[in-house]
Image (cartoon, rainbow, N blue to C red; front, side, top):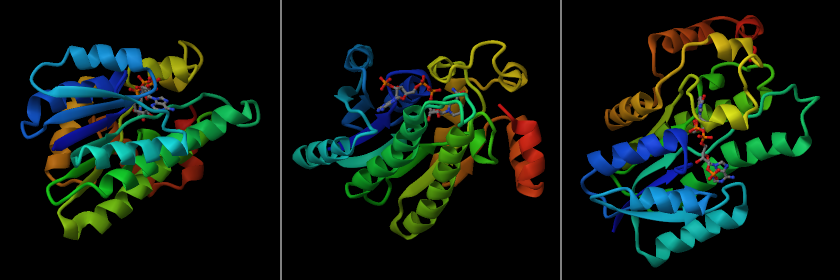
Length: 253
Ligand SMILES: NC(=O)c1ccc[n+]([C@@H]2O[C@H](COP(=O)([O-])OP(=O)(O)OC[C@H]3O[C@@H](n4cnc5c(N)ncnc54)[C@H](OP(=O)(O)O)[C@@H]3O)[C@@H](O)[C@H]2O)c1
């Protein structure tokens, strides 16, 4: 049985990936929708025609979730054709002012969760399969007031580059997408209200549906990193060329 797995499928970019995958991947038997809010996943699954969608309620900060995912894959003898590792969140605050658990939770979900899900799924992938990890433009250089978040996304970028290389000889694609800001629940979860961050108030926003569509095309082409919008492609170049002590003055959240 061929499956696609989308984490963070209950909202925002995850829903856009679900729309794309359900219409563009004809060889799938099932799409597994992973997030914590089962009610939302069930409603979404019921609204998708043409391919069976299976809600899978898991908290990806927890180690037992990776064991449960592994057990489900084994018991259904599933081959993972596509993994979209999209679940993630940020919190806007200086580390010194933030509560400790909000900071460590970001590492648990954005780094440990993404790694755990990829490691489990890889055991059920074969040539022709693909992994898409969702990072952020925050991965290019540290963003103060989003220091932990940007560090977790730098991990996702580095992890993807390594995995892309490791998997080349096995015919499995691996790419990370680095979107700029998108108008999703992310902003509310991160406490980014209008006026709370000059950067978020002035930066150009990306359209989540376009990010999903274009990043899947880039994945199929075998790219390793994909950034949407010329403005952010340029920022990526600047962050490569200039010392991060200078870049951080521009990229403060
Ligand atoms: N929006 C932006 O400005 C932006 C910019 C660059 C990158 N990104 C990245 O894009 C990805 C998607 O974010 P989004 O903008 O679509 O935000 P979103 O609307 O808040 O979606 C986040 C998703 O992650 C899931 N999630 C959160 N905690 C989880 C946990 N412990 N276990 C399992 N699932 C969990 C949420 O579902 P439940 O709450 O139901 O668990 C939700 O489906 C994230 O990795 C984010 O870092 C976002």
